Image 1 (cartoon, helix red, strand yellow):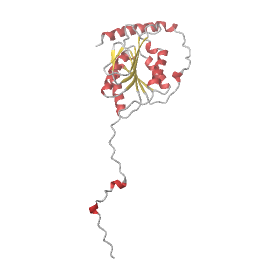
Image 2 (image 1 turned 120 degrees about the vertical axis):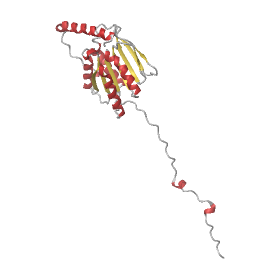
Image 3 (image 1 turned 180 degrees about the vertical axis):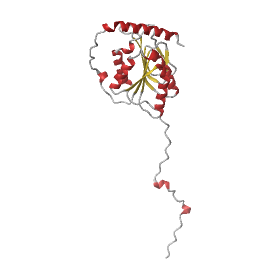
Image 4 (image 1 turned 60 degrees about the vertical axis):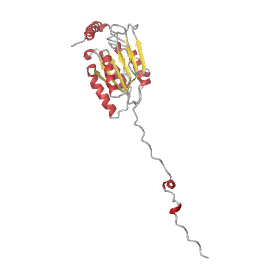
Length: 247
C-alpha cells in the first residue's frame, strides 16, 4: 500500500520527468568544472552508504555523488531506500568483525527518510555513525544518540522537513534551509554540484578516520615484587646457633 506522501511524490516525480524531457533539447552543454579541494585524493577507511528515493530512479544524484567520493579514495556504495535494513545488517556485521572505518549515511527523499530507521537499528546494535546527510527528507524525524554529526539539506517546498535531536543526542545537528535557492527543488536537490562539494567537504572535516570503539576494562596487574622480597626472611628461631669457640 502506498502512503499518501508517497503518492504525492509519484505525482511530483511524473511532473519533473515530463518537464525534463520537454526541456532536454534546450539544456546547454555543461562547462567543465574547475578542480577544487573536493577533488583531492585521500587515503581513508571511511565507508559511505547512499540511498536513492522513489522508484530507485529519481535520486540519481546519489550515484553521481558516490562516483565523486570513490574517485577521491572514499569508498561509497548506492542502494535503494527499500534495502535500508540490508545496509544496516551489513554495517553492523562489518563493525562486529572489526571494521575500523567511520560510517557515513546519505539519502534523498524517501532515501533520506529511511536514514533514521537505519540509525535507530544501528543504535540498538551499539554501532556509531559519524555523519548523516539527508537531502530533503519528507517527514520530521529525530536523530538518534549514536550519531556524531547530522547535516540536513532541505527546502520548505511541500516536502522538506527539519530534523530534531532525539533522546540522548549530544552531537552536532545542522538544519540548512535552502528554500531561497530557486535553482533547485525536491527532484534536483540531490544533483546539485555545489551541495555535493559541501557534503564532500563535510566528510573530509569530520568523517575521515576510524570509528571509535568501546575498550574492554583493563585487567588488574599482579603486584611486582623484587627477588629478595619474594624470599621470606628467616625467623630467629629458624637460624641454627653457632657452637661457642673452645679455649
